[in-house]
Length: 109
Image (tube, rainbow, N blue to C red):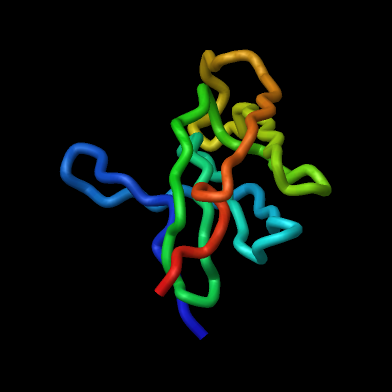
């Protein structure tokens, strides 16, 4: 049992907790990626309870994500999820990026 602080930021001196919209497990390494309303994708080592990697911010909320069957690519769907109401927002987009072992494998002890 544990809780991890994964999608948080400080806005005007206040801690902001962002919802997680998506989770995907790496098919080879057993790590997992989370995508949230902050537009960030984090990769986690659940056994060690540590973040392995954080990818660049996407233009809007991460609505979905998944690894390819061989674990070499990560598809990320960025789509505004109306967490701030009906405001102007970037268009929906899908990004596919290659992921290296150093980004998704658990760190050695």
